Length: 594
Image 1: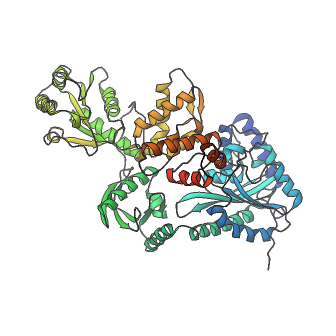
Image 2: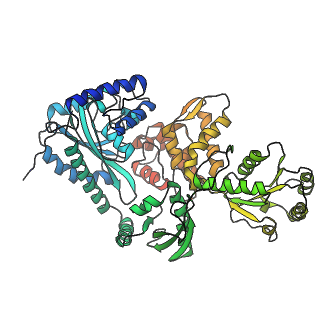
Image 3: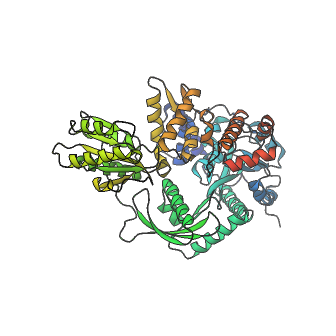
């Protein structure tokens, strides 16, 4: 038996009077930027604000068109039987069933009513067109993509006037094998529509597609998912499954882990897997929580991890207070704690060994703390190629100042001996000098040095505090472009936040300098960023692989993601370019959902 579903005739989400109010509230928002406190849903108001910030026109509709979308990929194959089944319930109703990729670009549209199809064509709600919020403003597809929640938008809730005649409900489709947004499924009809019924239908369709995505996953992914689900069935613990290119978390783990914690956890799991077997280890998360993790290897480079809070540690510890007016970008908890500890040592003149990966900003941190407390006193940096002995003697005449022994592990034997003697001398000096020695993680230090530097602090890598990129970027841009108006657009910022930044803050600064050669004023766009920002590959590339990767990214940006055209320009087959995109983890805006 075929069940018929009728949209547009059942009870609407809003009554006629409220619908008129929504229209007036929208006009008020467009004129003043504010909305009267009445019956406009908060989610709609927030979407209006995002649409306005993105520069979307409230009068004209101009969705971009994308060629060569992946209409035969895993998402489309998983969705086809579900769409075909739902299509039978629509029959000749004036409604459409739509599938988009993760970027809100329409892959498939099912509509059997002729006049309604022509109307959809007129507003370009058709295969190939993009309906992301930053492209067409508030609409169910774009807003569900932005919020990752089931969304209904009807009538004048749409930001742009040409969509006011429509009502649509959209549900996000999450790939449980990766935890990422795979696409969206949408039902659109004429306004007002029946929000609850339409939302229920797309919710059910999204869950069916998600189940089929699991069935179509690779054998390795299915094995990892099976182990993950088996561990999760016991309940009560935070469970995470990790592999080279995916992460799965249960609800407890999602509540416990911040975005930066995923990088911290992956680094620790990689370390345990190299050690070769089941292990339990302690770990400090970005918020300061100490946890115990138990790693169960599944296959090569993959594992299921159980996480539990260590006895005696609160789930939400109070972060230490970062010094006020510290002129250094970054307020994440894990970074704030290091700033607070270093400031405490500065106030007591405790000598510090400051370690961290290359490029994390060890000297910059020491400098910021010094100028926070004694800006009038000298700040001296001594490096391996300097006359270390004479520089150390000169520092004795700078009481209250700060001396940084930069990359102390690289000092020659005679320089190390001079440093040891100098540290012994200042330890007995009433006119204190604050000493900070910096070193790379894992570097070999003189055996007698740590004893003279009683405190050791580790500056976290940028991937462990990725949210700080949002503060670092404008700070670096203002340093590099005094007197020029340059900012980072939201799309470009999303690209920067997806990178793992193996070179840390130094690499981010180099990327921005490269970008400013292309964009001297205005708002930085994704295509302005260097090619390396558009890749998330997990292995270190050879010189030739780097050249090939950058060439592919450049051509993809030039062709706006047209892989066939890019392959022709590069003189390679389309199959080869797809393989290279996957191998190098290329994630330009046009390829990100593939």
